[in-house]
Image (cartoon, rainbow, N blue to C red; front, side, top):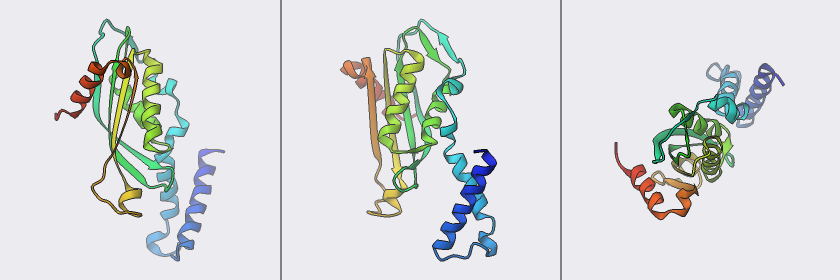
Length: 191
Protein backbone atom coordinates (compact mmCIF):
# COMPACT_ATOMS: atom_id res chain seq x y z
CA UNK A 1 0.00 0.00 0.00
CA UNK A 2 1.39 3.40 -0.95
CA UNK A 3 2.24 6.01 1.66
CA UNK A 4 -0.66 8.15 0.43
CA UNK A 5 -3.12 5.25 0.73
CA UNK A 6 -1.89 4.43 4.23
CA UNK A 7 -2.36 8.05 5.24
CA UNK A 8 -5.91 8.09 3.86
CA UNK A 9 -6.86 4.88 5.70
CA UNK A 10 -5.34 6.14 8.95
CA UNK A 11 -7.12 9.49 8.64
CA UNK A 12 -10.47 7.76 8.08
CA UNK A 13 -9.90 5.62 11.16
CA UNK A 14 -8.92 8.62 13.29
CA UNK A 15 -12.10 10.36 12.12
CA UNK A 16 -14.11 7.31 13.26
CA UNK A 17 -12.32 7.31 16.63
CA UNK A 18 -13.04 11.02 17.17
CA UNK A 19 -16.70 10.49 16.30
CA UNK A 20 -16.92 7.37 18.51
CA UNK A 21 -15.64 9.41 21.45
CA UNK A 22 -18.70 11.66 21.09
CA UNK A 23 -16.95 14.54 19.33
CA UNK A 24 -17.90 16.20 16.08
CA UNK A 25 -15.03 15.61 13.62
CA UNK A 26 -16.47 18.40 11.43
CA UNK A 27 -16.10 21.16 14.00
CA UNK A 28 -13.44 23.76 13.21
CA UNK A 29 -10.82 22.62 15.73
CA UNK A 30 -11.02 18.98 14.65
CA UNK A 31 -11.51 19.40 10.91
CA UNK A 32 -7.90 18.54 9.95
CA UNK A 33 -7.10 16.47 13.04
CA UNK A 34 -7.57 13.07 11.36
CA UNK A 35 -5.00 14.00 8.67
CA UNK A 36 -2.57 15.45 11.22
CA UNK A 37 -2.96 12.41 13.50
CA UNK A 38 -2.36 10.09 10.52
CA UNK A 39 0.87 11.93 9.64
CA UNK A 40 1.97 11.88 13.27
CA UNK A 41 1.33 8.14 13.57
CA UNK A 42 3.28 7.47 10.39
CA UNK A 43 6.20 9.47 11.75
CA UNK A 44 6.06 7.80 15.16
CA UNK A 45 6.15 4.34 13.57
CA UNK A 46 8.63 5.00 10.75
CA UNK A 47 10.96 2.38 12.22
CA UNK A 48 8.88 -0.29 10.48
CA UNK A 49 10.15 1.08 7.16
CA UNK A 50 13.81 1.18 8.15
CA UNK A 51 16.38 -1.58 8.36
CA UNK A 52 19.70 -1.93 10.13
CA UNK A 53 21.81 -2.06 6.97
CA UNK A 54 20.38 1.20 5.62
CA UNK A 55 20.65 2.93 9.00
CA UNK A 56 24.31 1.98 9.45
CA UNK A 57 25.02 2.73 5.77
CA UNK A 58 28.53 1.26 5.85
CA UNK A 59 29.72 3.44 8.75
CA UNK A 60 31.80 0.66 10.33
CA UNK A 61 35.48 1.51 10.63
CA UNK A 62 38.63 -0.44 11.47
CA UNK A 63 40.06 0.48 14.88
CA UNK A 64 42.74 -0.74 17.27
CA UNK A 65 40.71 0.53 20.24
CA UNK A 66 39.71 -2.25 22.61
CA UNK A 67 38.40 0.01 25.38
CA UNK A 68 34.75 0.70 26.07
CA UNK A 69 32.88 3.09 23.79
CA UNK A 70 29.88 4.69 25.47
CA UNK A 71 27.17 6.95 24.07
CA UNK A 72 24.83 8.08 26.80
CA UNK A 73 21.70 10.14 27.25
CA UNK A 74 20.33 9.37 23.79
CA UNK A 75 16.79 10.66 24.07
CA UNK A 76 14.12 8.31 22.83
CA UNK A 77 10.40 8.45 22.19
CA UNK A 78 8.34 5.36 21.58
CA UNK A 79 4.75 4.14 21.73
CA UNK A 80 3.66 1.48 24.19
CA UNK A 81 2.21 -1.40 22.21
CA UNK A 82 -0.41 -2.03 24.89
CA UNK A 83 -2.09 1.41 24.97
CA UNK A 84 -0.51 3.34 22.06
CA UNK A 85 0.64 5.94 24.56
CA UNK A 86 4.17 7.39 24.55
CA UNK A 87 7.08 6.41 26.70
CA UNK A 88 9.91 8.89 26.82
CA UNK A 89 13.38 8.52 28.18
CA UNK A 90 17.07 8.13 27.57
CA UNK A 91 19.26 5.32 26.41
CA UNK A 92 22.89 4.53 27.22
CA UNK A 93 24.75 2.26 24.78
CA UNK A 94 28.25 0.88 25.32
CA UNK A 95 30.30 -1.67 23.45
CA UNK A 96 33.73 -3.25 23.57
CA UNK A 97 35.23 -3.06 20.05
CA UNK A 98 36.78 -6.09 18.43
CA UNK A 99 38.65 -4.36 15.60
CA UNK A 100 35.71 -2.25 14.42
CA UNK A 101 33.83 0.83 15.61
CA UNK A 102 30.55 2.27 14.40
CA UNK A 103 29.99 5.89 13.39
CA UNK A 104 28.79 7.83 16.42
CA UNK A 105 25.51 9.07 14.97
CA UNK A 106 24.61 5.56 13.85
CA UNK A 107 24.11 4.42 17.43
CA UNK A 108 21.44 7.09 17.96
CA UNK A 109 19.87 6.13 14.62
CA UNK A 110 19.70 2.47 15.68
CA UNK A 111 17.97 3.54 18.91
CA UNK A 112 15.46 5.62 16.93
CA UNK A 113 14.77 2.88 14.39
CA UNK A 114 13.64 0.44 17.07
CA UNK A 115 11.95 3.11 19.23
CA UNK A 116 9.83 4.23 16.26
CA UNK A 117 7.79 1.02 16.42
CA UNK A 118 5.02 -0.11 18.74
CA UNK A 119 7.12 -1.40 21.60
CA UNK A 120 7.62 -2.49 25.14
CA UNK A 121 10.74 -1.15 26.79
CA UNK A 122 12.10 -4.59 27.65
CA UNK A 123 12.16 -5.65 23.98
CA UNK A 124 13.46 -2.29 22.80
CA UNK A 125 16.50 -2.62 25.09
CA UNK A 126 17.28 -6.08 23.77
CA UNK A 127 16.78 -5.12 20.10
CA UNK A 128 19.23 -2.23 20.39
CA UNK A 129 21.88 -4.39 22.10
CA UNK A 130 21.61 -7.20 19.55
CA UNK A 131 21.73 -4.76 16.64
CA UNK A 132 24.90 -3.05 17.92
CA UNK A 133 26.50 -6.44 18.54
CA UNK A 134 25.50 -7.63 15.07
CA UNK A 135 26.89 -4.69 13.09
CA UNK A 136 30.08 -4.15 15.10
CA UNK A 137 31.02 -7.71 16.06
CA UNK A 138 31.76 -6.25 19.50
CA UNK A 139 33.13 -8.41 22.29
CA UNK A 140 30.42 -7.05 24.54
CA UNK A 141 27.46 -4.68 24.45
CA UNK A 142 25.51 -2.99 27.22
CA UNK A 143 22.28 -1.01 26.88
CA UNK A 144 20.33 0.76 29.61
CA UNK A 145 17.03 2.54 29.04
CA UNK A 146 15.34 4.75 31.64
CA UNK A 147 11.87 5.92 30.64
CA UNK A 148 8.62 7.41 31.87
CA UNK A 149 5.50 5.71 30.55
CA UNK A 150 2.41 7.78 29.85
CA UNK A 151 0.28 4.63 30.14
CA UNK A 152 1.25 4.59 33.82
CA UNK A 153 1.20 8.37 34.33
CA UNK A 154 -1.97 9.42 32.50
CA UNK A 155 -4.22 6.43 33.26
CA UNK A 156 -4.31 3.38 35.50
CA UNK A 157 -2.31 4.00 38.67
CA UNK A 158 -1.40 7.58 37.62
CA UNK A 159 2.07 7.62 39.15
CA UNK A 160 3.87 10.73 37.92
CA UNK A 161 7.41 10.11 39.13
CA UNK A 162 7.94 6.47 38.30
CA UNK A 163 10.77 5.60 35.95
CA UNK A 164 11.30 2.18 34.43
CA UNK A 165 14.89 1.02 33.97
CA UNK A 166 15.85 -1.91 31.77
CA UNK A 167 19.27 -3.24 30.87
CA UNK A 168 20.73 -5.84 28.57
CA UNK A 169 24.34 -7.01 28.76
CA UNK A 170 25.82 -9.21 26.05
CA UNK A 171 29.18 -10.97 25.70
CA UNK A 172 31.99 -9.62 27.89
CA UNK A 173 29.66 -7.00 29.38
CA UNK A 174 27.67 -9.87 30.87
CA UNK A 175 30.61 -12.14 31.71
CA UNK A 176 32.90 -9.59 33.35
CA UNK A 177 31.63 -7.97 36.54
CA UNK A 178 34.37 -5.31 36.37
CA UNK A 179 33.42 -4.32 32.81
CA UNK A 180 29.72 -4.26 33.70
CA UNK A 181 30.48 -2.07 36.75
CA UNK A 182 32.54 0.32 34.63
CA UNK A 183 29.60 0.71 32.23
CA UNK A 184 27.08 1.25 35.02
CA UNK A 185 29.33 3.81 36.74
CA UNK A 186 29.98 5.75 33.52
CA UNK A 187 26.30 5.71 32.55
CA UNK A 188 25.32 7.20 35.94
CA UNK A 189 27.91 10.00 35.89
CA UNK A 190 26.48 13.46 35.34
CA UNK A 191 27.78 15.41 32.36
